[in-house]
Length: 533
Ligand code: TNX
Image (cartoon, rainbow, N blue to C red; front, top):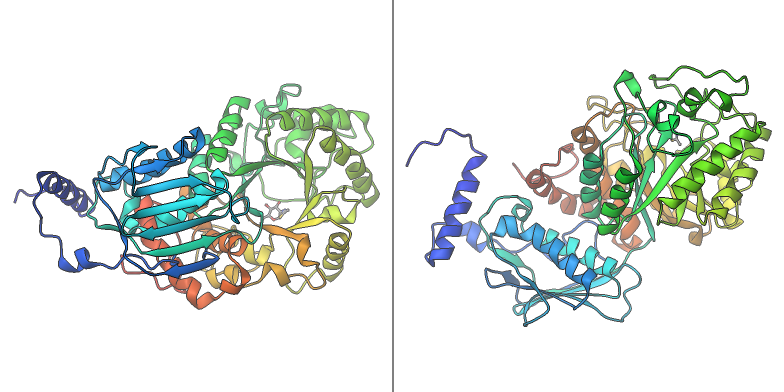
């Protein structure tokens, strides 16, 4: 055999191509017997855990002859195309997306008890059928299907099969309607391509809300036509003094479009009245003393405030909310409201009383960090809780009282779901103000019973925020998010009855080879029994 100068990672690709040739030529090649005989992934060994799994029957084997059969609907065909896009590079099969024929992988919309996002997956010798009431349900079913195939299916070059899916039925639907991830694009700016990469990773775990923290002291990241210096000047730096950046409206629409193609709703956040140094630096008139502060590239919080008593503040807020609402097909607009340490309490309440109706006027529902419960949350508003165990009793009581009054909650406990917390003392980057958060700690709690005295119906879901003071590149995002994000997604999706760390860590371990195949940089926590690389 000729010597190949490239190192080991190339070998499987070469082998894969040989196998493809072999398959095309109709002769068998010497795959290791144990590889050929490998049992398919047990039905249900996926993250998030499905609501119900009934294994049994013959597996379905994806072959060169497999077609992806779709309903005669543009959206179902698009989901079929997405699935084909995942499967074609690694299998090397044509996998035509068609509304003809029988067998194969079928994507089908039908009435039934699936809810808005649930699906059923049936697998047997004759084929796999995904059924849902909505395209979102089919898309989530496709993510389950992906995870039932060997991890190598995620590679971009032809790999050795077989590509078998265990026989049986998965019947699945989410516990919570809101399953979010937040990305702070203010402290460090991330490009459209980087955001899309994260969206693809979130979609794999059935996350359906992407909260973008678009403004903070260090940078304003979204173009607002009526206040152009917000982005052009307010967005011109970041933590550490790099060049920063911002999204044009076209960029932002592209993020929204891409997210929606993966069934994620984008929740834009403009943080107010604190965390506003970038805006105050861009426009002197927004400051009570009429003097613009310099741009800020440090990591302190709580030093900036909009000028609550000035009329121009509300012109500014109205313009920003109007333009942002026009860019937002989603239901929500997040107005921040955290750490307003430089705003007097009375001013904070007055500000929120004036700003929440502006959000409603432009057709959006308010989300605020839980400090909003210290003001008067608007009817229908959601509060995002980011406290921690063992502290803030008065604040917890305030949040619970608001929930009893009808304010919905999104749970993001900092000592569980803040993805910017370090895993251990020795792992970097990240921070540790809410403690060290290993994988088990991030997963092992119950959102339904988290705050004592909370009506269960008040909990609308969970969200894992990723603050980026210390994070600069996609590899940093991924290292902090994975594996913890998978746990957050499972808390949002899976029924409480499936919750079990010992079972979860085995399902989680199976994600490792998948992340390797996808090129996702992740933390190989010693708590998780990863297969050897
Ligand atoms: C607290 S959480 C903040 C952010 C920081 C984060 C760092 C919240 C609503 N405010 O401004 O980036 O801690 O972990």
